[in-house]
Length: 138
Image 1 (cartoon, one colour):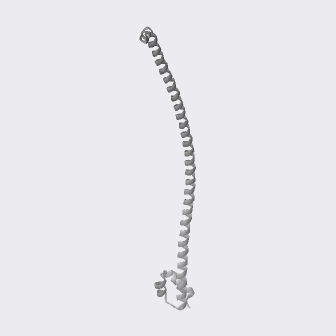
Image 2 (cartoon, rainbow, N blue to C red):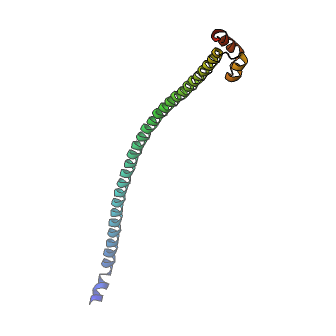
Image 3 (cartoon, rainbow, N blue to C red):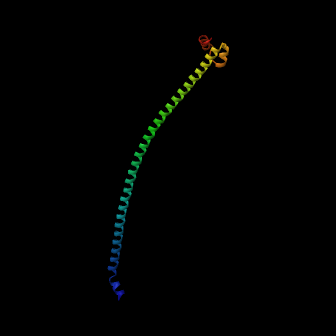
């Protein structure tokens, strides 16, 4: 009885099975298409976020670069000041040293030392010793 029913309605059963398969494939395609659109939107959102973060990082790096340039200029100025101070210290030590030598030469001239003794002990030139010897000798 069931077999007779199936055989008599075989064409209808095959047709409805094919229709169900076609509808299933269409539904599967539709859902896959919807899923693809959602994934596409998610990917675009991530791309927009990445672009936003890249812009923020770029701005941050520009600010850091500007700060580093300013600090470099300040360090350059400070090093120039240090070099200037070193030169001044050296100059002052030379002046101080020469003043000490001149003071020693003057004291030696006052004590009655000869020109040659003053030259040997102080390392001054002959003309300098001559001037000291002339003005400060007793």
